[in-house]
Image (cartoon, rainbow, N blue to C red):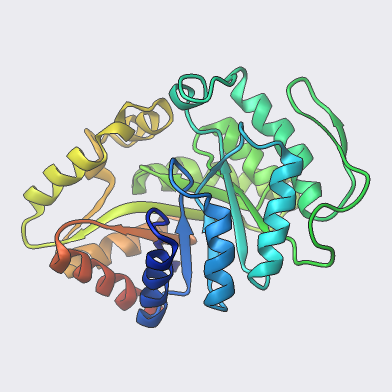
Length: 303
């Protein structure tokens, strides 16, 4: 299981570059960034990857509704060219409350929308021409989008439900997980997406898991803090379903919390469950965040 870390992109670009350089100097070579309400993540990653070579950078995730696949393909291929071929494009459906409530767009038939979107996007990322006429997504190209002769970016879906996992395994490189516990990954995520990939003749899928991580001597306080910090996620249907499947009362129950030895064991359990890359979100005060970072690097160095 590869180790990665989340790279926040909020705030001034120079601060993001400073954080990325610091993480690279520590030994992290893979970083994932979200796209929520801050700067455009792909633009920031283009600059980060250009300034700091040899970083593997990924989006976790870019919501697809505001971006036609032609636009996203051109942008992703441009970023891929800028950073030397180290981009993983993670995409997702976001949530109804955001898509309809904030953007005023339709959240109609989300699985169909994602399936048709991938049918258009995936060949575009490969530089192929596309003529798709789906019920919800239509796209036509007459030439390759973005720069020519670039390595195809990795494509992953934020997939957790069975149908979405089957789609991810059949048509993309894998899935990106958040708020999904170890038991659920072992019993549901890994077997579902792996079987779909095998049936489609595709390589073993990437399973990228991001979770809060707290290395601390006060686990009870960490649990309270994490439940408060990430309370919103427990109210969103896709994440709530994963917490319920796990038997988790809240975000803390799927987070990595405890002593150095306990968190290392939890990392090993994630690897045993089928996770191919873990992206940590350190939680707590400065000392606890530093301890979490150190444990991630310890695990990485002992691979």
